[in-house]
Image 1 (cartoon, helix red, strand yellow):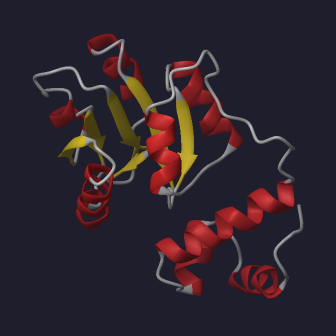
Image 2 (spheres, helix red, strand yellow):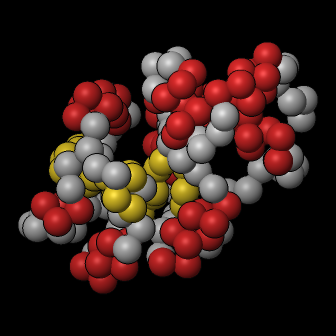
Length: 172
């Protein structure tokens, strides 16, 4: 079985993800912090790193993971994706950057992906409107459909968020 190192501060999400990955043939070990994960004794085949751990960015730890385990595939997952953080993660050594909620089939395919291509790009470009819609939906889900909490997390006025939510999903 391939070995996975999961660094995620949300215990329920981590346990559910580990169970689902085990069903796909992965043996997973979970850590809540990057410091504890860096004490792991054996080299994993892949590392899944949450970008936001307890309110702090985990991106600076990418270099540490890659220095310790250079052959491990490292995938950053986040509920707060942006182009800037995606570029930073890839420059620091991440093999890919996925947004939460991550489809397990996509994640398994990505973890086993050892091509020369570092980032799987869609066949067509994604519009800014589509990216915004996905970010709003992911943030809304993360805040259990609480409009006020979602607006604060997105640094957006609550009424602006409500207007955006009334619109239909942008067409591809």
